[in-house]
Image 1 (cartoon, rainbow, N blue to C red):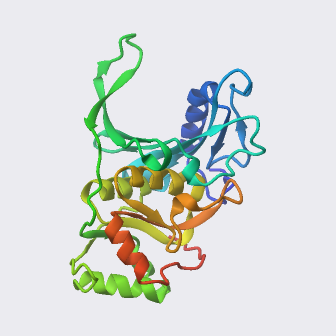
Image 2: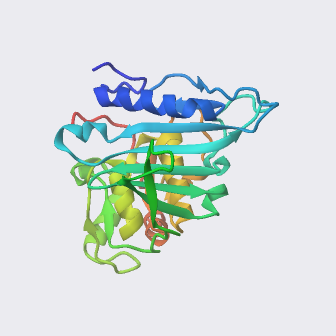
Amino acid sequence: GETNVQGEVQKPMDVIANDIFIHEVIDYVGVMASEEEEHVIEGKLMDFDRINAYEIAFDPLDGSSNLDVSVPTGTIFGIAPFSSEKKSPFTSSGRSLCAAGYAVYSSSVELVISLGQSGELGAHGFTLDPLLKSEEGKDYDFILTRPNMLCQEMGAFYSLNDGREPDWPDGLKRWVHDAKRGKTPSATVYSSRYICSLCADFHRTLIKGGWCGNPRPHLRLLYEAAPLSHIAEACGGRGSDGQTDLLDILPNGLHDRTPVFIGSIRDIDELVSYGDIQQGAKSYGN
């Protein structure tokens, strides 16, 4: 495959998913930004004097490196208002998001959406029913299966790549060491769960509690970190880069990367309290 703006080799499905997302959304927004595209994409609603417009940032196919082994994948998006008075799109923090969501493609297709500033209007989960058609008979329908979603304040799972432990900073090493032995302030004995597909890891974390993430500045602020933090806060959770809440970080560019720790609020609070949990940038071959 070709290489995208991130310097990553694209799977054919990355390109297909990106094209489908743009085609389906372009008529309804002012501007778009995709993880697979170098520049902002203009939507059809550029006449801001006539209509309220939105900007949407999205990862069209999260976890595509796992396609060959049938591991769950997903789509992530964040939506914010955009007007002609705004000099540049995608320059505000995640606090500007008015909605966010993700879909996870697994044994079922689930769609989770959060609404309101910092998710103040809550989050709801929907499941695709392929046997249920819309009234027009054209599209499949989603049914509400997880109303008023809440993430428990504390869980018993952490989710990150334990194989990178030799490169972790001291604070993160100490937390994981203590967590395995029930020696964190909560005295919880944690287990590790790691899929290496962000949507899948986050979906499990949201439902089961705990936290997931990556200590390296690896995940994208606009396309992954901010939208998922919006959802987490809507469910009573929290997202942090290890020092600052992810929703408070201002992007410097379309493809900024950041460390991510996201999940149950007390788990994140305890983890951050250890200090020194951000790892420096490093690339791995696997």
